[in-house]
Image 1: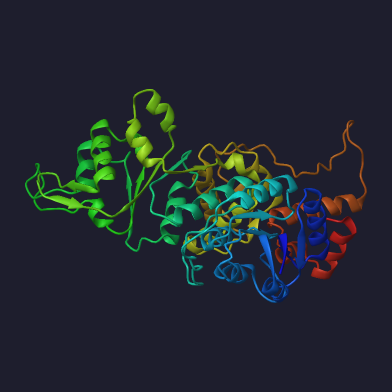
Image 2: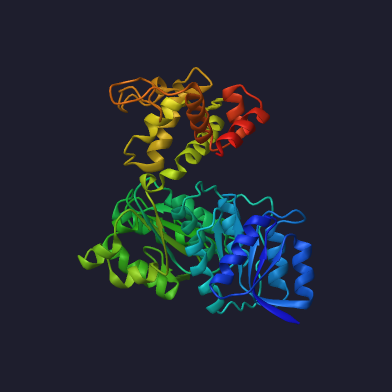
Amino acid sequence: MSTCDILIIDDDESLSEMLSLHIDDIGLTTHIAHTGAEAKKFLDTNACKLVLLDQHLPDTNGLKLLQWLLEDNNQRPVVMVTGFHDMKLVITAMKTGAFDYVHKPIDLQKLDTIIHHALKADTKKATVNTAPSQEDTTPEITGSSAEMIEVCKKIAIATQNTANVLIQGASGTGKELVAKAIHSHGEHKGPFVAVNCASIVDTLLESELFGHEKGAFTGADQAKQGRFEIAENGTLFLDEIGEMSPHLQAKLLRVLQEQTFERVGSNKTLTTNARIIAATHRDLRKMVAAGKFREDLFYRLDVIDIYIPTLKERMSDFTAIVSNLLMRINHSLGKTIKGITLDGMTQLKAQPWTGNIRELENVLTRAAAHAQQAYIDVEDINPNLPTAAATTDLDLAPTASTQLISLEEVEKAHILNVLEATGNHKGKTCDILNISRPALDRKLKKWQA
């Protein structure tokens, strides 16, 4: 039996050869397989230390082959590689047992770092988790930026255990969506229960969390279960944990340490098995340093930390986010909005979005409600936004500082703008431009786009 350092499984021959040459240059040996069958045949009589696995293969998909690779007890790390940006795929692959995940076009420096860590890591596991079924209903997380890929990797890590999670990020970035994704993919089978610590006064929040007995305080005319009881065997999501009073911070710390609590007005000790996911828009480390948040509670919560980037920090995801929001808005309003004009999209991208995705969703909902055409245009967008005429990436008006350009350059700029606005969806692009798919492909090939 012979051994190579890295087995490359990818049906793209030019990419495989490029990777092989690069890996050879860093002093490691490789073997290339273009199909799942070739990979299995090679591994029947040979060994490798690491696998680079493409998701899309001509005879199988990467997730199925990943499971096979992890089940043969060789404990080799597997790094998934794909040109498709799919958040659920990232989570599923990482949860199934992939060591890491990289996108095409591959950043070779980043790949070198992953290979270095993978070859040094202890990847032995007692069991291999199976991938979620096709009926999985995890809330959708949109985006393929490097920042969101890291968020999804953290989500995948969190689903493999029941450790406490602290999610930090500005208001409106989707912290609860991330919490729901962790719960949905995790092992807890109970309900997802959310509490906003900033929206309930301190005296009532204690009762809300821990419950109360009849007569415990004025107005307590019957016993009530707290959220810790309701979330048993599930997830308790404590949103805006930074707003919790010192008194309740102390009580929460005890629950996290002992997994026990009492209802308000009762001496009976109850137990809880709820997983705690906390979230805040504040910087808890600064609050700890300022004496405004308990240090011991912070470290109890901050076992797995996830930072959600602002919308402005992930503008490469903007078009995909808008597309996803419009689908949801169409469903909720009973509309059939197909998209946004280029001028409308330009205007949206120019905004500061201090309210992040929540603000964007509000603007799009109002625009969709007012829109009378299939595509939202500038005049449909929230009137609080700047009213100056939006321009496309290409300014066609000649001035003293610009040069006149050819009709072909105008056509190219417009087609590429439409492609970007539709998230590189060629079918939608052809519908908007009223051209055939072969015609679009010929133009893109000509421009090498």
